[in-house]
Image (cartoon, rainbow, N blue to C red; front, side, top):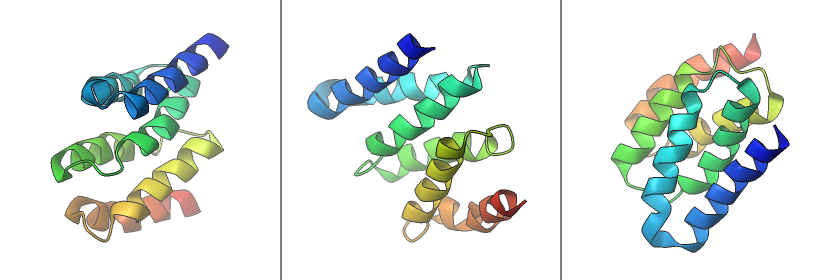
Length: 110
């Protein structure tokens, strides 16, 4: 588990430093969202947050769709907080984020 966390973190750092491979790294991180291990999914969400800043609208919307679907399955506090942060950050300029923001807040309040 520690190795996976370090690997996920390294993918995020590579994407931040080498812009040419950033889309491929983001795709890899998004594919980890379907993993059965909640810790891997939670850590991937936290790293994805740093990677979707300054991306185009279609990438943000597709990542948001996948992350919001996971809201009920994720119990790690850092991942849940990151989901709320992502939705809140993009709700002002992303129609999908503004539409799902009340539902995400409702799920968090439960």
